[in-house]
Amino acid sequence: HVQLVESGGGSVQAGGSLRLSCVAQQYTWRRGCMGWFRQAPGKEREAVAQINLATGETYYHDSLKGRGTISHDNVKHYNTENTVSLQLNSVKTDDTAMYYCAVNSNYCDASTWSWRGDYSYWGEGTQVTVS
View (spheres, rainbow, N blue to C red):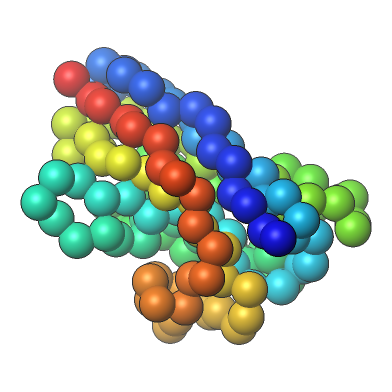
């Protein structure tokens, strides 16, 4: 079955950078979206960055535009487990949250990429703390 394995995160100073990576074990199809949600204490889980595995289109939360880049690391290697990374620069204290990798294995586009209910696979989360 599909499992999402996250890496990266940790503690970082404001203004610094971080990189999160996620491997979708047993998910080799170039279909749907894959990327990151985050949840800060007392707040709803929100979509921050996704990449369309079929088209390569990228989608970002407004707070990440200009600071974040999501990439499909093995885009040229078909039939391999999808690996996605998020590079986040100029981090802010507002970026502090638990970050969850997620996969929507169906259709997604610019209108639907942030719909949490469409994501059927989730990682356990990795904590990012900005101070």
